[in-house]
Image 1 (spheres, rainbow, N blue to C red):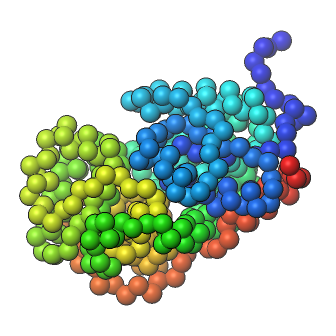
Image 2 (image 1 turned 90 degrees about the vertical axis):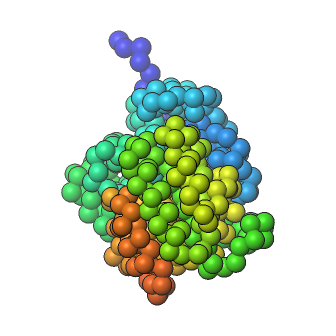
Image 3 (image 1 turned 180 degrees about the vertical axis):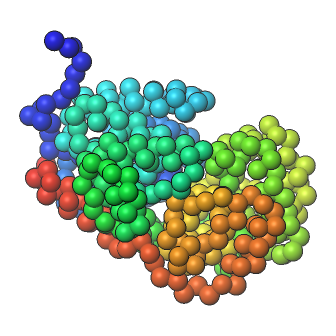
Length: 381
């Protein structure tokens, strides 16, 4: 007989594992965590360590007043390649799951964190729930696209944020149950904006006024790891800087700063006269920066959603988006890395009427936890 360990259903306990490891994951799971606490459901947080610096991670738990992770996988952030990072997280996640034996593991999104947590659970015979299932960019160059598709195919419970996401799942012939729940980012923004307004002083610190500055974020591999793309985006930002007098606030991701230096792009950055590069911000400060800017330029998927919800026009610095709902309602413009298209995007979006509807639903966290509670007959602690 094989010595390989697979957990039997009788060994599993009435508890939920929440897997996080990136800034967007922590944000999107914040209302899920609060809902688990409100219902007195036993759970623990497994942190894969994909992002782990105070600025990029721990501060989010502090700011959002969330339960600290029970498990943290060490030194994952030192891995330079996707395979090594995924392997180390997979081993660490498996060890934590063998110790805790939860009946279900919840992962959210498309980072290596989520694929590792889902695969560890799948191999042990633990059910997987994929929050934000069914998103598709149809760009096979993106590691996130690989991850989200594989997670969808090994999950028993697929929580699709929209009907479009559900159609993607049906088209891909997934085996799990599909539930259209809305997106937890709506809950996250509505809950966390209240904390942000109470705690953040970032506008005063940076001497910014509402609707009087642009916000910029760049971090995606396909942008910052390819010199030509990165250079084109910065050239586009310079054109924007020359044509508009608004300050451009740029919280620079560590990966982006490294690539700026590696590709020797600092001289180009220096020519952007009203660019203000600042360190990565805690989520509450970033949320206030986003809520009060007059335009966001970004390559982040989550920020496309957040800006849509907050009624902030968005220019997406990518060739595609897995958030087509933002295009349908008119909150987003996909420019790619072309300088002329970036300028066109800003001209299109800057004075756009902010009357689009929220396409991401409401109350997703309650719906998801209600389904989990019923499916696993979860009782009190």
